[in-house]
Image (tube, rainbow, N blue to C red; front, side):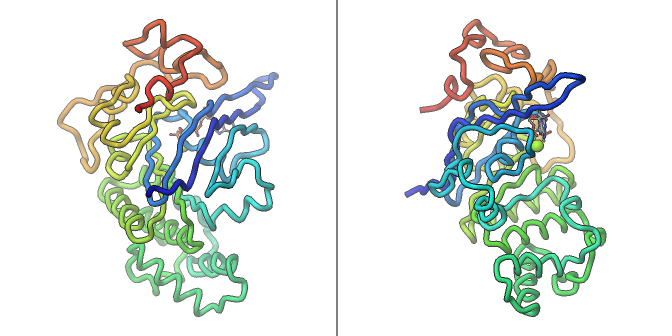
Length: 319
Ligand SMILES: Nc1ncnc2c1ncn2[C@@H]1O[C@H](COP(=O)(O)OP(=O)(O)OP(=O)(O)O)[C@@H](O)[C@H]1O
Ligand SMILES: [Mg+2]
């Protein structure tokens, strides 16, 4: 039976910020709901600014103070949006691990990798012996495919390539035994060969450890390569959700179709077929519009798309 790990309900994230002399609201995420089973990979795709990162950062409370987050995010049945900040710390890292686009920026340039691992293990077990922590670190780095792991523990971040740093980042997330790994554009800064290696590593880890993964990408074809289910986001809303086969073989929303036509095929250096760009500009998140946020750019807009009733996911939810 599928066991739900994360169940997000009506998540809304609004930033309040100064623009010129006025405070304005940025409607980054608008009333989205989705869930994730244990051992499942969920892809979140959409153009830049569509709300992919904010939707996931809000769950373990990783957004700043100028933000209002409403809704619920049940993690193993506990609403993380309602737990005290102190308790939330336990979920970060220990339960939910995160890796980002530029792994180099997640590391302290003055700390060698070995000591980062020792520090991480000591968070969980303050009494752990240095030799034991080192041995565990080597095992994890070998699991994530870093060659010469033992010798490389004394190296500093600048001595690794982007792909190697991403493997180290994944090993650090696993060091705390996370159950959910949020990978936010983890391969965007890497060349296609290394990109493919990181994608297979994530698939392997899911198989071996049964972890759940949220894989965020602006490339729908790349996300489809490893996801079981997908969410297509635009203007802070979910335009369409479904299994990867439904989304890629039988897309319903014009935005999904446009994204598919605009995505280069996973693993290719260049494409022989013409990629179609999506005309128009992305929405302004400070202007709250009624109806589908994609309507102003869509060639198939009808009056129904601009009505109050349109709620993205509701219109295109599959039964
Ligand atoms: N700290 C912040 N303060 C104000 N606005 C923010 C903040 N973080 C994000 N936003 C806004 O929220 C919206 C959604 O941003 P988000 O980072 O989730 O987009 P994204 O889909 O991850 O884009 P990308 O593909 O570029 O990473 C954007 O309009 C962004 O400018
Ligand atoms: Mg992002």
